[in-house]
Image (cartoon, rainbow, N blue to C red; front, side, top):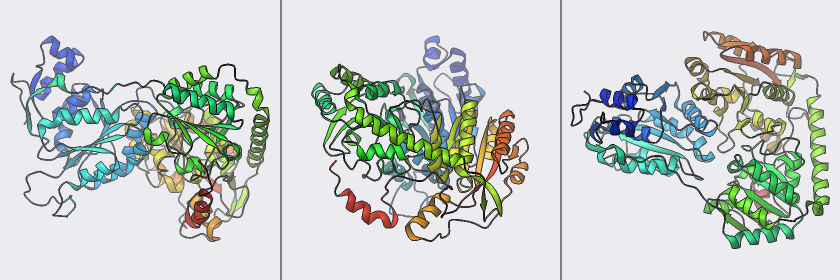
Amino acid sequence: MNVMDGSGLSAEKHAAAIAAAGGIEAAIEAGTLAQFVDVSVSEGIVLGLLRQGVRKYLAIFGHGSTSIGDMLRIYEEAGLVKTYAFHNEVSMAHAATTMRWLYDEPVALVASIGPGPLQAMAGALTSITNGVGLYHIYGDETTHGEGQNFQGIPKPTEQHIFSRMTALASESYLLHTPEALREMMRRGSARVFHPFHAGPFFVHVPMNIQPRTIHGLNLLALPQRMSARLGAASEPDLDAAADLIRKYDRIVIKAGGGSRRHGESIRKLAELTGAAVITSPVSSGILPDLHPNNLHVGGTKGSLSGNFAMSEADLVIVAGSRSVCQADCSGLGYRNAKAVININADWSDVNHYNKTVALVGDLAASIEALLKRLDGLDPAGRATWTQACQAKKKEWRELRETRYAVEPQYDRVWQRTVLTQPVAIKEIVDFAKAVDAVKFFDSGDVQCNALQICEDDRPFDTMSEGGASYMGFAVSSLVASAIADKPRYSIAVSGDGAFWMNPQVLTDGMEHGVRGMIVLLDNRRMGAISGLQAAQFGNIYATNDAVAVDYVALAKVIPGLSTHFGGYSREELLAALKAAHSYDGLSLVHVPVYWDAGSDVSNLGSYGSWNVGNWCADSEREYAKVTI
């Protein structure tokens, strides 16, 4: 039964009035919608999110979210929102993250109660660790205490445990009192649309609260999306940073995820100071690939050139990075650094290192102010550093070329010759560039190789989840291209291990009309971990399998899915990629690849340190020697 407001209007009539007028405010001004309305909590949530521009919902409905689901039905029939059904909450969370991260569209996802929200919360690690703002709306246990809810956690001494869990992970709100909707939306807007520290906002709505009536809800009091801008860092700190730049000769700029939309500022600073720019897994393309100051990815999964520049630098300029362990080799990346300039709006991140001049403020504005203080600086004075970096970059490029020239290798698993992973990824990367496709790389062996192989000339051509290193992110992200207003053709490159984390993309992708492809590189193992085991202990244990899956045959059972075998040669793989791309829908390309722990050609190698496994003692001992 739909709630009626004081004028006798139902949810259907509210939605129709808003749709006809073109918005909530317009409908109120036209007199077709009252400013003060009686609505259910479920309708209030939809209205509140409309005020913040949220019109797309990714959902798996269950008995914990039936009221919210029906309200979304009403508002979708009016043309105000659109709901996309999924088959797995983790995959849904990844797709929602990509919607905001790549396409910058605010979205909300809806899960039921108990296991569903727990899975969605697990998938939310991608948005938490990468600073991506979106809404998670979960059903929750009832508030009357009539007995235990069968999908609650049976701990009678605690209330609403799920909301406490999400509060620890990010920020959350339990809508226990319907009239608190306005405050919940205010807090949600501040988290989802935060200018430099965004993240998921978890909304918990008890099942018995969802259909409750909010009497006299003031629609114009519902908060709109947060809007805030930062200025440049303080004058004294900018002066101190300029003094450091003049003092030191071997400078690196670590361009993190927060710098991706400020490539022009990074370029000007690098060229003026002679600095080597080091990218993170999420900032590939911040400088064009062939730009002389681009030393490419550095860190645990870094390149030969990037890690060289990091290790030899005496001054580090950190730009929009939280310096996660994989980005700075567990604190060992800058062994010779004497000082740090850190440009970040977050007080904690900006003071991550010792001996730091903290430029707290907007990244682009701070760099522009810094450039004025460096007017007249001659980068030629750092020619020795520039030449050393260029020599190492040349060495790295030559190493890559030798790996790309490797012929198919005999593999004991496949009992025949197959392509090596670097060769296969190079073909995929070159093809993606030729057709202007965005590339998603799943975590693991694929990611480690791809970050070194990609030759991007702009940000957001490569997306790889380096924050939580979440397997299954790449294939799940494909679905976002079917939901976005302005989608790009997408290629998800995944290992067999990562693919099986979220194979639901095969059905979700077909359901929502994805135009893109999955390239499945199959070495029948978790190659990155097998390699780590071999390097650390000399043995490989429980990271491979004996099940040979015919992925082409598997995918053929899904009507409309285009399937291709990638073959055993460059020519066969390229032909498969072209055929998949020509299909107006979702395609899967299966490519067997070579793996051998004792081979120098299986991978491109890893050139960073990492505080992991039995290397921890050595890493901790070396970290104690680092000054910054």
